[in-house]
Amino acid sequence: MGAIAAASSLKPAYSSQRSRPIPFGSAARTQFIEADGQYRDSLLQYCSRLTPEIEFKWDQIEPRQGQFSFEAADTVANFARDHGKEIYGHTLLWHRSMPPWLPDHLRETRDWSTVTGHIGRMVGRYAGVRYWDVVNEPVDTGFRGDGLRPSVFLDCFGADYIAMALQAAWAASPGAELLINEYGLEYDLTVEHDRRYHFLRLLERLKKGGAPIGGIGLQAHLDLRKGPVSQAAISSFLKEIRNLGLFVFVTELDVTEADYVRPAAERDAMVGAEVARYLDVVCDFEDLRGVATWGLTDRYSWLGLPPEEVEAYKQHGYWRDGTSPGFNRGLPLDTDLRPKPFLDALKAHGVGQF
Ligand code: 9MR
Image (cartoon, rainbow, N blue to C red; front, top):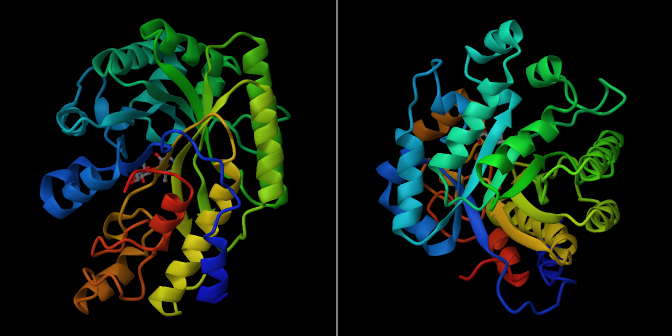
């Protein structure tokens, strides 16, 4: 697809004029906040919310049982506070960020207070945080009839662990808004259809049981290899979310590319167009509380090439050149922190103030 098609889809179907912009944020990393002034300035320029990309995760906080390491988490939290930015709390329970000691400990003891201890500690220490991803990625297809992802938490505490975790977060901070954050919900693929189905059924069960869930996080890792996004599927999914009385956050928006060979401008247009197609539908959802991208700049993106290829590009001097081919260009700013059509798509949909 050429730049012309991409540009026309940047004009959104979405046209309702909200009284305020939809708050925009990004995942942020302490390591780069400390090391890179340009990156820091860009975060401050564009974002009103920051999501610690790794710093709040349990493996970072309690690498050895009972030994806590809050430095990196405090640094990003203080950075946000000092600059009038909000922190989005990511994430209290995630099967992929368990400290190494935790699985055996839970299997041996079945001690739920280990989990509530962690939840209470985080929610208590970062008491100003309004939104928390309480459970991250609890759904997976192909394992169980109820669509829950096999995990230590599920094994040790049963399917109720999700409601129990929400209760624990609620008990520690009744004012906070609690979410479940999930991925793989955007495309017209059987597996994503099943994920939407199971996620909705989980949310229904939670609401029916009175769990203190306020909303859902849609990670929105878009992928041009699967694309385009299915606006029809997303729209009917969101109708059901509205019927459940839940709010929505886009928590980890980015785009994996399918074609790394075309000129950068064409690639950027394709990325921007996919973002626009997605926002066309999601920004129509009335109770959309915010949009966050999973990183602000391609300079620091988890959507990298394999490390050996990155090394090769670095050796050829491409690393800081935002127009060079090779790197995933799936975030709003390029590696030189220049805005791309992705950022225009956000702007055109009333996301952010820039
Ligand atoms: O981008 C994050 C990467 O730097 C970390 O190594 C990884 C493990 O902590 O987590 C990545 O972020 C994930 C997020 O927490 C949950 N959704 C998927 C994200 C990408 O894997």
